[in-house]
Each structure stands twice: as C-alpha cells, then as structure tokens.
Length: 483
Image (cartoon, rainbow, N blue to C red):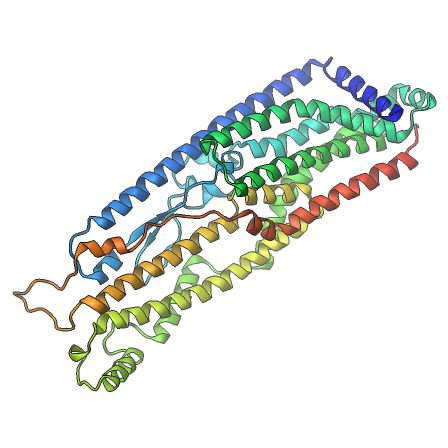
C-alpha cells in the first residue's frame, strides 16, 4: 500500500506540473475540438450513407415489384441493386469505407463490382484522410502523450532532482510507474469523455436496442484503444528515462511516432503490393471472359458445348426439336450458362482474394513490430470498415445475384412455351406477381467471431506488446542510472 501511495503521489505531482504549462491547455482544447468535429462528421456521414442506402434500396425493390408482365429472362437482365448499410461503429472508425463502393448492380450472366464510393463524389481533401475519432485516438493522442512525457524523467535528471528522489528511498519501479500513471491520468481526461459520448451515440443509433454481438464489438473497441494509449504512455516514460536530456528524448519519441504512424504503414502497403502483385481489373475481367468462352456461349445456338446438351435432351425425351420438350429449352440453357459463368467467376475471384490475403497477412505480420497497424486493423475489423467486410459484401451480393438469375431462369423453364409467338401474337410473358418470389437484399455485417478470426494476428501482437512492456519496465527498473 505504501508503494502504491508513493506512485500516486508521483503521478499527482507530474499532472500538477504539466497543467502549469499553458501550452498543455491549448493542445488539450485543440484535440477536444477535433474530437467534437470528428464526432459530428462521423454522425453526419453515417446518417447520410444509411439514409441514402435505405432510400435507394427501397426504390430499387419498388421498381422490381412494379415491373409489368414480362419474360423472366428479361427481368434477369433488367437487374436489381444491392446496397450496403454502415455498421454503428463506423461512426467512429471510417476505415476503408469512403473508398469502397456501397452499391452493386446485379444482373444475369455478369458480376459487377461495388460503385458509388464516398471518395468518388468528394473533393481532393479526402486524399489527406478524413478525421475520425479512431484517427484522433490512434494518431494524435499518442503524439500528445509523447509531448507530455518526453521530459517526465529526463528533466529530473537534467536539473538534479532525480538523484534526490532516488536517495529518499524511491526506487526506479515506483518512479516509472508513477510517471506512467501521471501521463495516463491526463490522457484519460480526453479518453473517458470521448468514450462516454461514443457509447451514447452508438446506443442512440440503434434506438438503445443492441445485440450481444455489437456489444462485444464495442467493449473490445474501447478496451484495445485503452491498452494502445497506455502502451504509448509507457514508451514515453521509458524513452525519457533512457535519455540524457529532454531534447534527445523528444527527438527520439517524435521519430518513433513518425515510424509507427506514417512511415511503416505506407511502406508495408507498398512492399506487400510489390511482393504479391495482383492483376489489373481489365486483365481480371478479360481472363474470366476467355474462360467462359472456352466453356461455350449460352446465347449462341450453334455453340458446340450447348449443342451437345441440346442433342442429349432431345435423345432423353425422344423428340426431334426443342419445341417439343416439356419445358422451356432456352430457360434450361440459361440456367446452365449461369452455373458455368458463376463458377468461373468465383474461381478467379478466389484466386485474386488469395493474393490480397497474402498482402494483408504481410501487413498484419508487421503489427508485431508496429502497434499502430495492429490497432488500426482491429479497429476497422470491429467497425466492419475493413477490406474483409467489403469482400463479404461482394460475396453476399453475388449470392443474391445468382439466386435472382436462377429464379428467373426457373420461371422461364416452367411457364414459357418453346413455341415462338407469331408477329401478331402477344410476347411470351408471365404475371408480375412472380417478381415478389425474390426476397429483398439485406446485407449482414460480419459477426464478432469472424472478425476475431481474421484479426487474430493483431490480437496476439497487442497481447505480446503488453507482455513486452511489463518486461521492459522490470529491466529498466534494475538497470537505469540516475546520471
């Protein structure tokens, strides 16, 4: 208890001395204003995107249901839209969401990518990044911690009070712990109010009715950011204790901040993309088209692959023309064509995703030497604003598109005659009530289990960082000198 009392006294002394500096008040006020702006812009972005997605999803559904009596295959080509709504935590962590599309046009025989990203409609300021609460917590607060802690021990050494403190019976472990607690207490004056506002807004967005899955995500979001900030408090005090002067400590800490938050993340992305090269979008689509043509063209009646299917059907049903088949031949062929094209697309997509997975794994591995990358990946994963969430949306949309196309093909097989209408006859159609057979698309964000599985390296790296910090404090407490 006596040891804890000493550490608390050291923490209070540091906090009191820090707030005698006018610059600290100015910096704290500045960051508080940035946090308020980040909260407002996050709220506005979230509401705008979700209201827009909901509006156009509803309109798309209405347009689909209001189509008149029509040939089912025409409906498959008429298409539909899939929209992605943002998860509640994306208010605080924008992640990659501004650069990924949130709507996909779905049509038969063709897989489209997501469009209408926020970046596509924004000005050039977006290139510099948007200010989110996560960005302030992950980038600006660590810099403030370094500003508060660079002279926490080094200044004591410079003015001679360090020897005096140690001669009075205070040991290095108590001194380091007290300094860490002092800096942490100052940072918590910003962190805790931010979290209170964050939780309130998060509850408000969900009408105060939240799922267990979202609750766990929120708890982990807060916990990991708390650990992340404490980590920088420890680093600031240790570097200050190892430095002969405050100036050297400040230069070292700014260098660490630059490496962690700017240099390593950008370098990691560039190296990953260089080592694991991906094809261009044009090449990707071209390769798919070539493989589909090798299998056959379902719209070409003379195609060898589909001609063989035709001959087989005529033989099985003992008829001499497709008009005599007991089902719509064209719908059957379209069903087969959709299976082939979807299978080929999914094969190419899986190969592409393996390359991206290698790139992302390289980045996640670097989190073992950079806690910023670890917290960034975790933050985006928990907020469903990471690359995996975007791919998950693409996959859900593709599943829906395939279901849509095959439902329309099945309706054609069942209800459309093989006999072509005469010029004076009405087109071959079915009743519009069948369009309601296709359910509306609703995107389901990844659950907490899937998030933790994909971010397991980041979780492990943060745990290892915590263990390493405890070890460093123990080592420092035994080996540091007052001079």
